[in-house]
Image 1 (cartoon, helix red, strand yellow):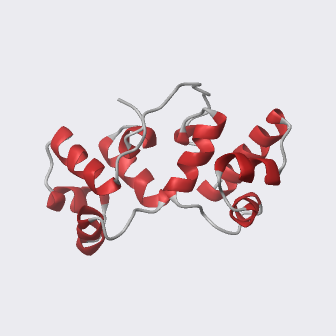
Image 2: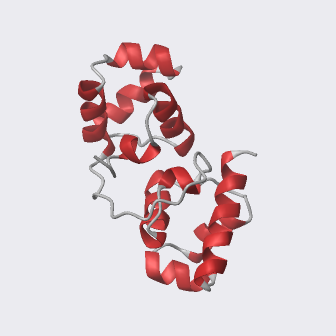
Length: 146
């Protein structure tokens, strides 16, 4: 099952369990109804910031939402730093250069440079690539967990 299909399925299940509709979720998260609707109908992958808002509302991991884990870890998470700052942290934490990251994770140099300069934010697919490359959670990549 692809990421968007799993996200749609999990979001639908969470909304059913919480007995809320799209309008209520939109109001509680500050997201647009159409954004949530497109996720549920598998029309569009959300931004990672939208994913975080949904995970924060349901108090679950982003890894759970995208189907990387089946365990539900109800935890309070840290506020995420801007991604360019988090990228610096990750490079230092894992002691790798941008060049090594690009090669190992099969990312384009220009893409990583734009992230590093804060001009571009990664897609959920690229965040998952980073998590797989570093063998850690998506929440760690985003700076939500210690």
